Length: 503
Image 1 (cartoon, rainbow, N blue to C red):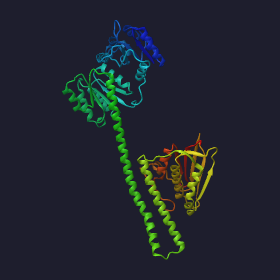
Image 2: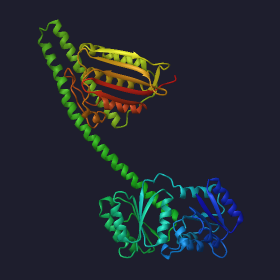
Image 3: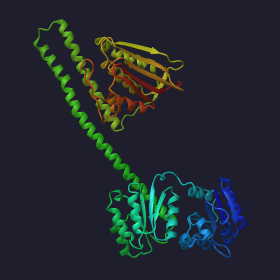
Image 4: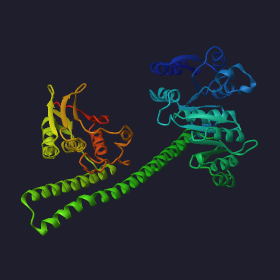
């Protein structure tokens, strides 16, 4: 990128050149206003630094000539009408800054300035920060100079801009870009449609009800200011204004606008979660009725007496299974509440994955035996014994996966838990079964807490439909992944991936 440095002091030009060239810019020098006007006939600078106090033509006069309107068809204006200009002067005052604005200045720097300061300003103008880079401002002003000044100021903070020179054109542009304009800057006095009329029209459109609107005016009387606010303006600035003040106002309003948007999105999310939790509680309360009635029925039979020992064992097993199911549902509800309220604080550290997998499988051996399902374990890990995880969370994930595999497997089916090296320094844990598999239509909602897909096991086992969603969230909190593959009628394979631990 090229920068034109205009200054009648050779020493100042050298200091500015060295600083800008150190930042990777190409520099062309001009020792006076006339030299600057001549220079832009032969090349197009991306930025101009302009000394104010110069002989023949001072910086403001030179800038005014560079800013000549395009309607005049001046070949200089064709090049420099939209080029940012930084004024550099030893006389800094509000009056000087107002003159600089009127002359089309973009920024104002006072001599002497600290090393690196000018380069920082140049970088900000030519490579604006990205925080607001996805946002667009609409500028409506019948003054070409004001349009350039506002546009340059907004570009310094990364905003994209679109502009119009009268109220009617501005309204048409606003309609064409409805939903994609995040800030509006309007002049108050314009031909055809004034700024307050345009503001009133914009506020009637749903897309612009909460959009910040800043009105510019040379009229400082209280009555005019009240009209601006009555029309729906968010703020106002009196012309001529200082660029830094406009930037400060815009930053404040846009950050408030973004915060309000995030709060609205969060409110929608919380309302959706609340609705999902209410539905889940309603379904769970219904699901709890079945195991509770089972326990109550067997308890009444036991009270009546006369049960044979063989039947006592059968009833005892059914009661134990019902209690386990109730405990599982309550655990799921507790975990969902923690995840929803961001209260699930995990303690990540080295975990012996081999030992944990054995622990999980051991707890399900009685259940698998009752359904005559074979549990297999394979360890193919090489050089790795531990993963980085929360032991309680990882055990819960494994328990969910093995419980699901047993629930949806038939008699004589098999479930295999495999440990193996993943890519890089990671570990893969696979839980594969030969059960019913999952219908492809159900796959998109399996991991959504707000959309429960409840299925009944091969032996009529009920479920809450949230085990996989909880497992997925816990794996993400441990910087891991959970991927599921399924073929209906042939089974499911779930793969967990976690970073390994050097300890």
